[in-house]
Structures are given as C-alpha cells and as structure tokens.
Image (cartoon, rainbow, N blue to C red; front, side):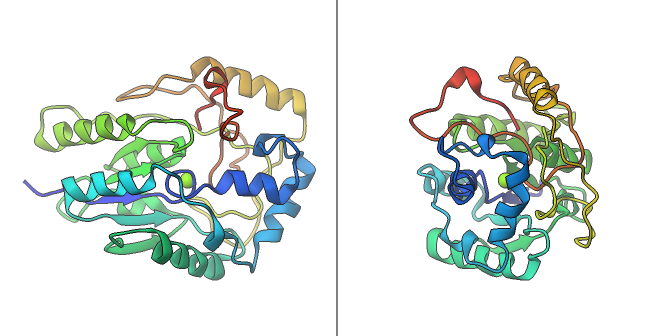
Length: 264
Ligand SMILES: [Mg+2]
C-alpha cells in the first residue's frame, strides 16, 4: 500500500494570519470580522510588498501538529496560497516564515492558488490536506484527496487525529471515500488574495457590502457550526468567490466564545 503525502496549509493552521490582519486594519476589538468592508482591500493592500507573512505569529499548537504528522508519515509538505497581486513576494515571505518557525522543515513548499492539483499521486493514492478553509477541503476531496478541516484558533488537535484515522481507513479500503462537501463563507474583499482557479490578474469577486446580508449568512453558518467529520456538510453559503482564507475566524484568544464559532 502506498503512503499518502500530507500537505499543511499555513494561514489559519500554522500561522495566525487573522489576528495580525485585524491589527493592521486597526479594529479596536481585534477581531478581523469587525473590519468594515470598505477597509478590507486597503488593509490587504498594505500587505503587498511587505514582510507581513514573514512576521506572523506561530500558533501554539503548530509544533505539535507538525510532530504528529512527521511521526505518522515521516515528513510533510507545505501547501499555501499566495497573496493576490503579490505572488512572488508573499511566497518569499512565507518561505522566510517556514525557515524560522518549522522544525523539522517540510520536504517541499508549494505556494499555489490551485491546491487540488496535489490531491493525489500518479498511481491514484490520495494525499492529505490539512486546511482551515472548507472550500479548499472540498476541492481537494473532489479531486480524489482526503481533507481535514482544521482551524487552529478553534479546533483541538483531536480533529487532526480523527481526520488522519479516517484517511488511513480510506486508503486501506475500510471506508468509502465520500468527499466532504464544505463551503466557505467568503467575506467581501477578494481583491488581493489568490484562490483556487485564479489567473492572478483581475478581480472577479464581488463585495458584500450589505451588513444585513452578511449577518443573515453568518447566522446560517452559526446554525451549522459543529458539524464536522466525515461526510458532514456545512450549509454555509459561498458568496462571490471571496478570498484565499474565506470564511470567518473566531474572536481573538480570550474573547472567544465557542457558541459563536463560525466554521470556514
Ligand atoms: Mg488557510
């Protein structure tokens, strides 16, 4: 039996992007969800050409996550999306971050807006993606891979343990591979951060500037929060294409309320 390769996303999984994003936007609550729609693009613009990605803090769980994967699979890969309009520089900054924070280092680093290309090996063996964005997981699984939706600021590492157990069963043929159909709530902006399928050249997304519409959708997401695991469906509504990480992150540490968790 061939072994799966494990791909780890960075932002939201290993690196705490969203807290720093909120800081950069200057929102008092520290919660990126409170960034007014009109401020999202200007804030993302501020990241372009800078070392923003190299300076992101590492999640406290990151080392344990990496160790767990290395113990079971021998090594790991990084699979992260570039900042739209800043592909080259953001890739460089992400590599600086990896060098500084990860031990052991990954066997390779893939910075791509189309993660699903790596979903399986030439012989069909499914690879594993650990990512905080539901739509990335679904695209990966629909392309024949096995996804684990994990959001470091909300999920415990048990989510990874369970996901890897499911992956082993699927690869062994003990469990049917039924792609998880997850969608991400894509919140406004969208201009700058590349996502799967992007040509990285123009903005084809639409902003959601109506707060009522946003709230309605977030409420719907709240209702479905907690449905994780094999075959579960988060009934979020994907709107407008959005941006790389999509979705909604939890409140910053200390202010987080579990009941308010919105799966992305
Ligand atoms: Mg991510």
